[in-house]
View 1 (cartoon, one colour):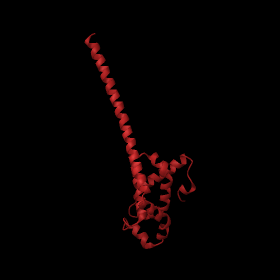
View 2 (view 1 turned 90 degrees about the horizontal axis):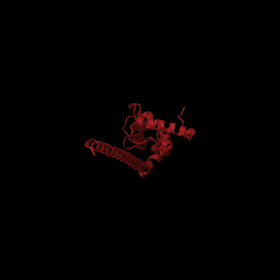
View 3 (view 1 turned 180 degrees about the vertical axis):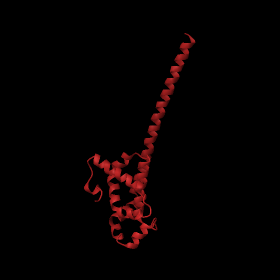
View 4 (view 1 turned 90 degrees about the vertical axis):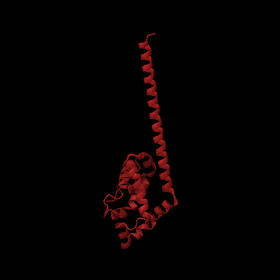
Length: 170
């Protein structure tokens, strides 16, 4: 056997080992990404299901409409005096977080749209007046929330599941 044949065989073997290593690395990266997505999804789901968030959602659905009739309350929201004391801001910030992470590619949109599309649209409709007040001085307030709601509407249209309540108000 000559040295050239041995050298060629060694080069082919080295290339095969490098290719196998690269494929294994790609598979590991994909699995790590999936694990990270699952971890993020579970953390956000736990946050949404927490008693504090449940109380915020109940407040927004049942109490907020009456509170928004109070001019002083509306002004607190508009001038950013209410950040820690208003449950509606906690709910808006939650959806802002999801929308921003989805828009930036940190979270897979479909994973969150499967379980959150209806909830995001519902929260957005309930918070429309609050959003308008917050945007008086900060026009981009909750822009990620807007993004996720738009994705939610598109997702539900594609899947034939968009109810009238999910459509934008006229």
